[in-house]
Amino acid sequence: KQEVTQIPAALSVPEGENLVLNCSFTDSAIYNLQWFRQDPGKGLTSLLLIQSSQREQTSGRLNASLDKSSGRSTLYIAASQPGDSATYLCAVRGWGGANSKLTFGKGITLSVRP
Amino acid sequence: GAVVSQHPSRVICKSGTSVKIECRSLDFQATTMFWYRQFPKQSLMLMATSNEGSKATYEQGVEKDKFLINHASLTLSTLTVTSAHPEDSSFYICSATDRGLTLNTEAFFGQGTRLTVV
View (cartoon, each protein chain N blue to C red):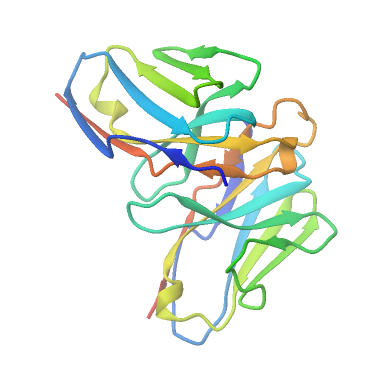
């Protein structure tokens, strides 16, 4: 059974700092990994999707890496801003494509202090 | 990215009544939609997988008679919480993938529905 872990559960940093959010998973047989952002009381916004054959994806100030063999992914946020404050979840999709389910971590709640 | 619309965003109902939540893919067709439940400070827990034109597949421990799922078209899935009780109060979120992007399989989520049963 796939398990996804995100540690720490919460993180507080000053504005402008570069930071790394970690995600680990137990079963390396994944189809892809996706990072999401969730604001309080809201749904999930997709940030980055990494296919199992890829090692990283970039979008603006965000960079996500994937090391499938070690079961790890990181989300790098450059020059953090107060608007980045949210909960960040990673999820892995099992082998089977669009019909296979996503397994989520509990998320990391990030607070960026002005 | 693709847009998934979920309605309503908030609902308060009396114990014993039923509530229907709609999930629509606005600019793509979704053969498969997923329904999740999220408790405070917890991860999303998959409840069921909704397939267009067929019966939903429920996760272990999820009562299919209590959480009725209908996926009548490629753009609409509904979740009905029947005979709701206070313990059903939670945040429900739907997800869909674009069936045209078979290699991508990026998941898009609705805005979520906060259900409170009083």
